[in-house]
Amino acid sequence: MTFYENAFEAETGLIQRGITDRQRLLRTETEDYLRALNLEYEQRAAQYWDRDYSSEEAYLQSVEPNRARWLAAIGDFGPAESEMDPLVEPFAENDEFRAEWVTVNHYGNLRARGIVGVPKQGDGPFPVVICQHGVSSSPEKTFGLDDANEVYHSYAQECLRAGFAVISPLNVTFAQPRARYTRMCRMLGKTLWGLEISKIARLIDYAETRDDLDAERVGMWGISLGGAYTLLTLPLELRIKAGIICAWFNDRVRKMIVEDPRHSCFLPLDSQHVWIPGLLREFADADLVSLICPRPVMSQTGKCDGIAWWPWVVEEFERARSHYEKLGIAERIELDLHEGGHEIRVETGLRFLRQWL
Image 1 (tube, rainbow, N blue to C red):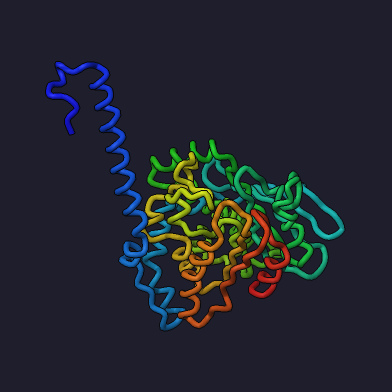
Image 2: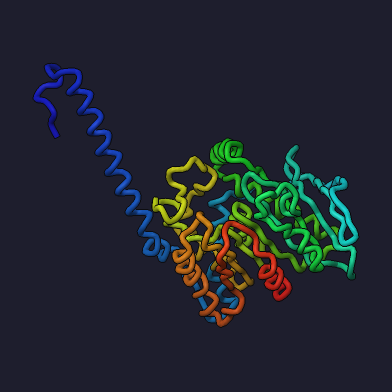
């Protein structure tokens, strides 16, 4: 590509045009090459999985290397560094339940916080549902507070009314601080996901200390970013026996890199926290579900939800279900595909939790 015979004799405008045009071509070539690599996900991921479907025990053993690599991808912050020393403060109470803010030591000055609610009716210990809020949100919203758009449908309260205890963890919620802490984590070879998943685990540790909570029957139900935490946590936290992924499960390759008017794509957005190293090497959503298998899992997906184009979600779900089918346990995985949008589905979720916890 030649714009001139001798740069020292060329006009300034011609030099500038050459700089601009070469840079544009380089960017286009780079994007084309990287996009093609990412789109080759199935061929690439096949090299990293060697599942054995002969029995549930054999299956779990066969995916253990992938589970270890998933932990390495999000970053292992290790065990908590101090005694729990719980601080319990009032949150809300009515005739049906009592809920309190609980704070426990985690790492150094970093503490784990969440709302813990317990039913007043019935005999404990009660099975526990981790109700995880989404981005720009809060544990209060899981209880129906500050939820004018009725996305959450007070699902933590509904769980309590149904006889479940709840833990609603507090996560870093807004995009800008999440991006800031993501950068700090990456300098350590870790991610903010890894740090906050360890916090969820710490709250389960706390549940194990209470006589009114049944830590042998723990489920997790999260929406949006909370759905992401459900999908990303269950492969690592085996104490969680069942999960509901609401408004997150997706064709992850398309979600990350394919800009299309039928869905929102992360590629042009400044959502730095979603870019987990190695995610599209072997950990698309169906493959992460294969690390939840054989535990029960549900995806709640609204056809009106702009985060995804629902036919692609169905395709990805079929890929996820294939692992359960090959083990003869297809009844443990379910797609709640509905006509609504980005929202919790209380009735189907409670039915699922009653069945599996």
